[in-house]
Length: 82
Image 1 (cartoon, rainbow, N blue to C red):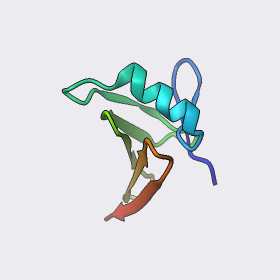
Image 2: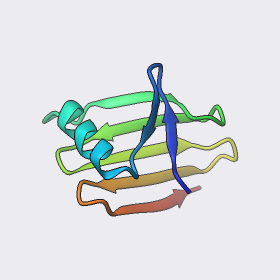
Image 3: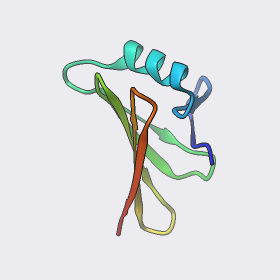
């Protein structure tokens, strides 16, 4: 299942390796910039951009927080918090 985050400009597809690498190249900074927005379900999303990965926190409507880390080599992790 692909994960998209709706921004004011477009949808973000971090499972597309070329898109991910370009996104990291464009937005990574030493202070790990944080971008915020909403997904297609209206859930709040916080994106932190590092030099080797993008961390996406989704504050789900069910009260849980989903964490996704997309690594520059194309691997990714997902875990949940209550």
